[in-house]
Length: 139
Image (cartoon, rainbow, N blue to C red; front, side, top):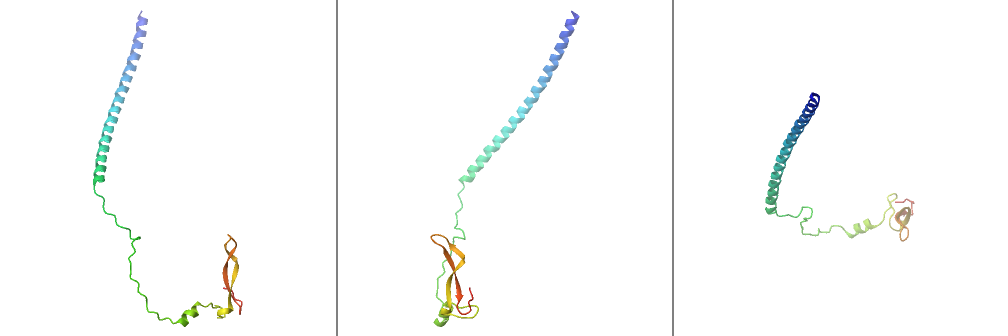
């Protein structure tokens, strides 16, 4: 019988140890839960304060918008400068002139530059080059 009682005592001791361990764990988790609840309460308070600040900012009048400097172009009155260029100078600059020999007028002709294709559609379009007929210089 003593043997049976000692078995019960060992079992009771083991169970009481387990109960104290579990009780310690429960208390630890209760401390964690209260800390988390405190943190949640702080965050909710901060959230409500931020929402109030947002409402205050949205209720403030917006500043007037001004056009950007890039889109603003001041209008300047245009005046024509007096023309001091004679008609001889204008016509001489419009004529084609060979940079090699100085030939002008009909001595310069335009040809297609087959090395420079501008477009393939609807047909091939080539760039133009000028050729002096006197010195055969191409420019």
